[in-house]
Image (tube, rainbow, N blue to C red; front, side, top):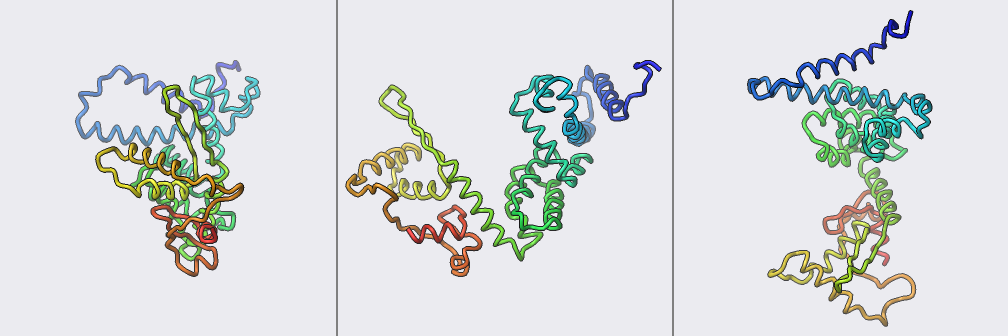
Length: 297
């Protein structure tokens, strides 16, 4: 039996058939479909796209041998080069492919077309953000509920709902777990903190900063203390920032640490004492332990 006579795998046969069928209608104008047919076709294609993407990612996760054959770093790198997509996009696809192997419920939802690629990313990220102390059964319930919500919510809405998922599937541990998640997020924010200044050559300097939300909330409060209705918000804050720096007494600047600052934090007393749960700093949600730290300074 020659290589041409060897029957191909059903997955490859399906891919070839899909390619052929799509080519058969590639020249047909879409204007003449009835309104109802357009509606149904768009919905069917959205589901087919999710199914085809899941199949591609499933193959990508198993394509390490292809990468070896082409001397590529990994299958994502090879496919990105072969299909002319950016390295960043290729790495993201390989990462999602690996994640789907660890999240069979999300993979199955993509496989039946009920969850798209962007929704799957959010669902997996939301479940993976749960602390290691959350048991597997609760994680599975959280993933299942988010998949159900995907039927009526886009990825942005799902991301918001994902932060509150334990309030639905495990309300008895939700507050404590929210506090732990916020602590991890706050530590990560402090690790990423940076400030860069670059002279523009026209008498101005561009300042680019990445700071924790609690610091941004504090700065916003300082800058919005003076109302300047005749100028834009960005201009008003820019002027206020300049005045804030100009009025800092250099003799009060410490060698280490900083001056104490009065802040208003809304938090139940038991949360403050136990360092569990969350608090409100303006419109920013912070952990109870961060609230205690601010109170101590």
